[in-house]
Image (cartoon, rainbow, N blue to C red; front, side, top):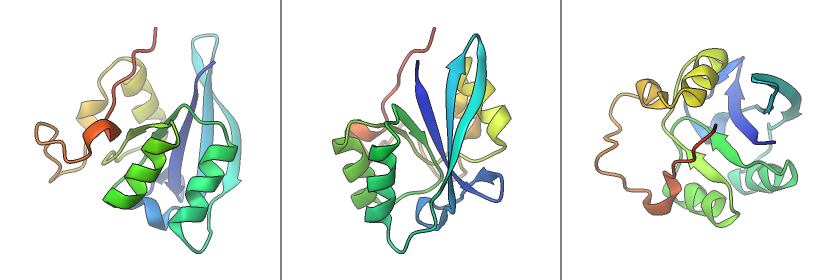
Length: 126
């Protein structure tokens, strides 16, 4: 079972990770993504958000823009990071499952010039 977290703001992927107010946790159950839980994510600093991510035992985090420092912390915690993603959660989940998440990359992020090192990892979901 794979757990995917979304940094949310008002039922959408937050445009900036640091401004997200909820963490939506989804798992792949019987060919359909299901919401497992929604965790309060409105904490004073991004370091506390990383602690919450670790506690949630996420495999993957999908979020909007994120600072290099926080992306590095998330990566070091063993969570695969898909930053610079925007859009409706259901549409992004479907695209992720079908290997088409690149269609949801925010304008201005050049996927061919990855500044994030290992942070922009790809995982295959069967």
